[in-house]
Image (cartoon, rainbow, N blue to C red; front, side, top):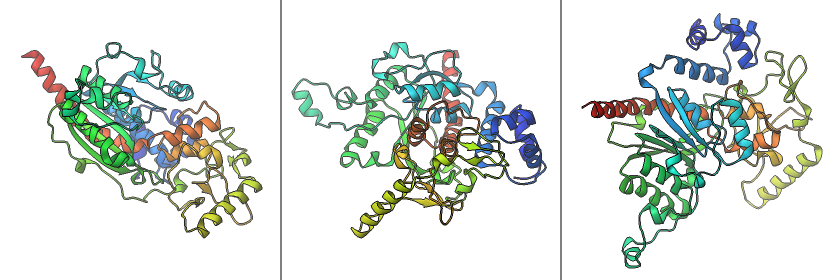
Length: 407
């Protein structure tokens, strides 16, 4: 980052040096050093600042409304907040995820729980629907057979009993200008491809949306191999293209960008880091018993010709996918602490950084719940970029709708 670019971003976001220092956990002195071109700020701090600067620079006319379904801790929401969206409805059933979401998004309304119990009439009108819906198996039967039995067909039957049904019914009844759906990469091959077939058919043939989908690896933005499928849809035909995504080279960001430096350059954050050097709390180091178990387990599977085992990483590596089971033993991402020392888990703050959350993101829950939440989350920078690519087309459709009203 060139000299003064960091300062320009800070000013565009409307932050003082002291405010930025407080939000990122660094000292004002460190912020001044970055602004003088002395050293590079952490990628997480840059993502936060760029997002805030983008929100401040969005013209009022480009503001739009969106709803956040299966919201988790708000990873998808951050992408649409960053391009000027205003969230008007949130649904998330897990009470601990609700706690983290509420701590970070101070809305003057409650978070709805089970979306299957929310009537469409009770959901506000909106311009964009955003959902990281869980994947469930669908049953596909021939339309002719269903007709012969007097049964409904289309999404009214094929997706009934699945959570995608609730996405479909809201799209049908509210007709937002656009949507973004997120799921695991394997959605395309689930049930021999039949699940994805129903989803695409429902969105295009039954609901009439123009749809694009792409698998994106978060490794473009964060030091983690994490592939997710992104499905984008627009109510009318627009010149959307995945070629408009700006994806940095994979591996350009390494784990050192998210690990605690343990040298005093960041403020201690109890109970993740301690002391004047903000050293990682010893509780994250694996016990001798657990470390021996993981090594034995890896050796057993290696001998059997399997690839199962722990993932030992250092500052210059890229991690495996962080999963919701990380709280159990941390085996997929263990930080090497040098010869003679057992490795350690990532702290919840490092997990937040690994998923692209800024350092001012509040973590009000236990370590166990935090690990589950970040393991279930999306990588924020991926969806900030997808939202950015969607923005001009969202705006265009809203302008068309306004002109039709005026005609």
